[in-house]
Length: 178
Image (cartoon, rainbow, N blue to C red):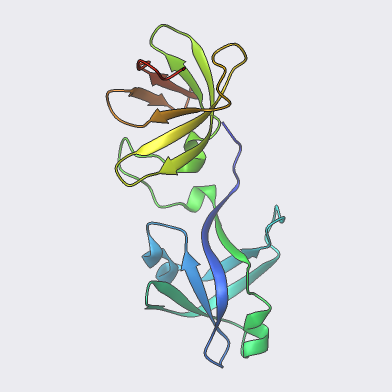
């Protein structure tokens, strides 16, 4: 499993209005969480730690975006400086999911093992297709000639996810390794 410290929940898209508000595109299934935040941690793409931590003075929603008013950001120019920055929360602050549901960051890095004990490789990404998620797996040497495996995250294929062991138990489908 990857050792994730920070989880992306939004991206600053642009200033909103002329009083320093910012428009945030939420990257979370729980955008209402912004209303409960007293501060935001802002990162650039390469930052491993927050570049800026600012107090939240106000939050509202507009056309699918989150509009935030941050302390000491009082002009269009000050808001423009935040454009393109990412808002993240610590891994411990993510909204708890129901039993059997997982965040992508929890799945990336897990080893996929078949019911016969064969290690297929590790999950590198999760595609969200609408119908069901698909696990992208970088296969171990000798498993297949394919550069990646696409494993549908459906109950008939994914039998168990064990975060403690770092494994996903897979029922191998015909044609999966071809």
